[in-house]
Length: 102
Image (cartoon, rainbow, N blue to C red; front, side, top):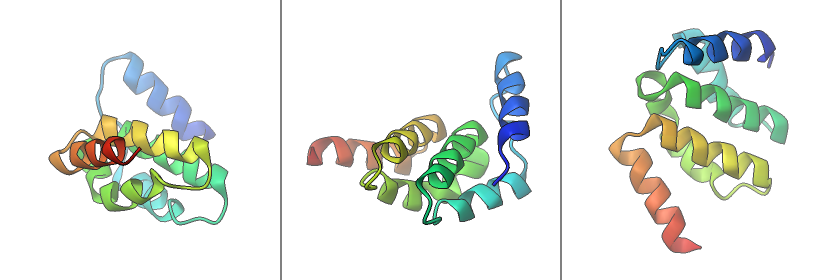
């Protein structure tokens, strides 16, 4: 997954105060990459969805919730970050439940 350009674009969007610059195609690719066997791809996908916000990221909440328990600590952290940024009722519940389990 090529995220360098997208991340740069998203960073610019965040710097100018736009809450969501993620298009549907990029979000769909990121949601698919959450199932990758490569931790870096899962990590990058979660980060991308964090920038997408609730508009496109909410569709990934079930998978991001699973990734809170990923074998890779970086993926866990990125999933938690994405859920915080998505900030739907379901995302908040997932974070609350994960906190209670630890």
